[in-house]
Length: 490
Image (tube, rainbow, N blue to C red):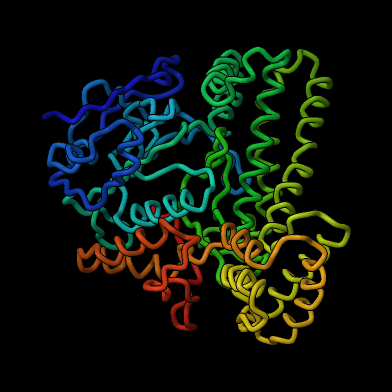
């Protein structure tokens, strides 16, 4: 039987200026190392056929399936604040789109599938390490309930790629609501192609914001919709200690999904200034800077849409500023509501925000583990002897705060068990700890051994469950295990 992809492609029906038609470059000896079977079923694909040599050849780009219309998408972007008028998919090829079991249109894209017209002297390939990192972290984010691109499969190519040294080559099959970015709009705006900006905006409305099709001012409503989704997304990142690491406008998705897991990381000890990315030397994309950068990126999107707002520049700018002005309140509302849930507050009272900020300040001062502090706080809701205080260098700092917290939760009618269950539902036990991710990648690269990778993916699929048999995966790194830098992997 032949592997069948029920493609229904729409982006490749747009004008030729939106992309370059290019086929994946065949590889020597593709071998499937991981298939996301539940996601395959969700996409209407047959996982058993995808696990055959024929399926591996498709997932590696060696064979192009029937109905595919492979393209590399054009986009521009601000990278660390500096505008680059042409970037585009330099090592990724969009095979096509399918409608999943819920009626949602999904892109199926190969990352590491060979050079494209946008490769800028790059080889268009991916090394095994970054492919495994994106698979691990994107699927962990999905399990945490955070909007994200997904990983369908990882394949080794049987070839090596040259970075600092020769590394095993691999291809990731990425699934997204779309791969349209702020930078996609910037590509056309930089060329003063207002008609293309309009065409792209209309496409985005139909695909991602269909409720806006009959809006009185659809392009204003589109900007407002993207602002709202980004505000919610970045709040969700902060609530689990996630640092994207490279929030360039070409990595800012119009759909509101997390995209491009390069030098991303989860914090261990809480530090608002935490940076892991080796290329973020000035801390532009530090943990606590992410809301500000999201608004900066959205402002670049607004600039692209100004010609669609009004022929009068001043009027268009004023209208865009009014829409962008909603971001701070939307982010704050989502973030503060999430923090209240994390500390077990079902209602909102004066002083709650200060109470929670006092906890965060104490965590930062005492190098408390972000994930475990909140998880153990859920246990402390039912047991005064629970070891949340053990996360603090000076446990008395927690004790002082906990006294005020207990007085506050005593004002609510919920019982201790109900509060613990609610807290455990939002405070994960397991995150992709940097040292764990690096360890499984190293074992795969050095020994061609994927058992540790498989086990880590399995644990992270249930982040809110205790999983006592895998309790060690919740532990913070020992001093000699700490990962201080993460890398893009391109």
